Image (cartoon, rainbow, N blue to C red; front, side, top):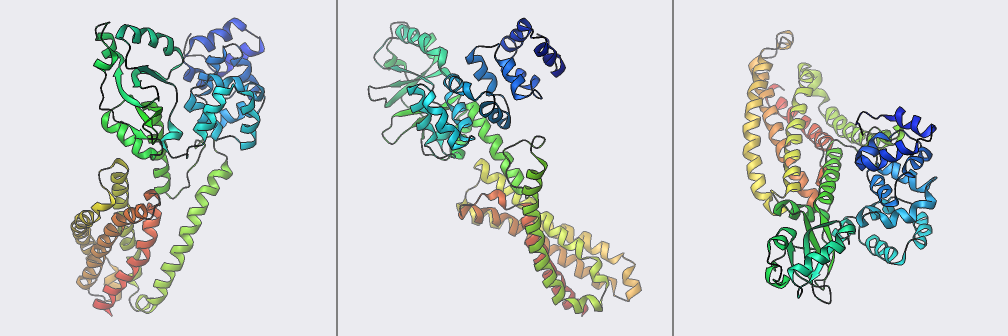
Length: 455
């Protein structure tokens, strides 16, 4: 099937009820490709397309639709089909979908699902959304320790069809406590009559079911696992988290951090699919809040130094230059520390090392831009017009810029740590947040030097 297939081709096939062509589309193309090609179809047209595939294949395709489209699919014309789809979907994917639905819809649908699947769904839904339990799937392959390799391979053939992955196979006792694991590679290379207990690895890296998902992702990333087991307080295996689910969390967390650092609330929809009103609201709340805060702080500082501005008007010319330098240096530091916290390079306990590092960095950066500010101020024509000594003005601007840059660097590096300590996402120590604080305090620093030298 050619990848040149586009939306008009699909619509034409649907209008003509081309069963053979539609069946070929939904059975031969990758589910992600089908989801891409069908974007733009109505819910009814999409279900008409999916009706040409088995339920299992429908579930695979549905998992690649954007969250908003998934909700439309299962709450609209396809609501009567959702129970069968849920039974066929990967366990972690179906729980992720149900978390996005109205609780009343979930309660209406669950009685239609097979008892075993219903109990599994309720159990996974009971875990906090940011925990390992909410990320995991119960579709894992397992073996008892006493069987032979030949028997284990036969058993895996039976399990493989509906398991998330069989590359890692977990060895459990009669109470489902985790004893070890064996990779598919080791099973294939082992002697057929060897015991699983003799070839399994007993040192297993695992996570607790209540572990924070960010810690889970760091563990998967550190050890480069394809999957990691999830255990309860009795050391029983309750599920696994695969690398693709870890990647999804990485993308989601990175997106949230980027939005928070830009002063935008997190969004469930993609940028292009989100309603205009939603994006406006999420941006306007932060923007208006920062505007009010900065207006109050900056206006208060400007009013306090109104006499200095009236005496030496040229001082007003350099206000944007000085405060923007502090905002930029603070944003740099905040971004670096937030990223370091996210990847585990630093912790809150490293605050003193970070403070010393950023103090020296702030001095170096401040000295650099301070020299530039000094030279720029000495060359301005405004000094000639007002009779201000250009070298004195250069000292005011250079020293102010250096101090403001130092202050912005220290503030920007410490805010993410303070936010983390308070249990707030460090991403909220955003560029607008840092800039707002540095703008107000920067004006105070600037006019303090101005009064010292010029007034």
